Length: 108
Image (cartoon, rainbow, N blue to C red):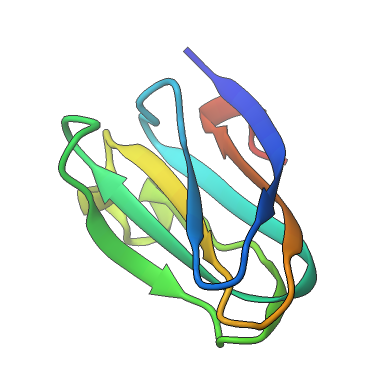
């Protein structure tokens, strides 16, 4: 089953929001985040959809982040897994972020 889904949410100063894939990626995933202010994006993976391991982190003041993960590019250990992307607002003003995940045949 493939998935392409995203959400747009506010992130208050000092807080974190996350978005988790609804289906387990079998061979590739693309996580992405876009923000109107600088935030720290992180990506994570999980075999069971509950316990997540860290994968990547953007610099603290990023406005966009979009790593790809592919079994065919030497990342076979990442699959099959659920993926999660988070945004942490380290600033003093609220940010609006869009977080999304594409998996398998829906990766563009």
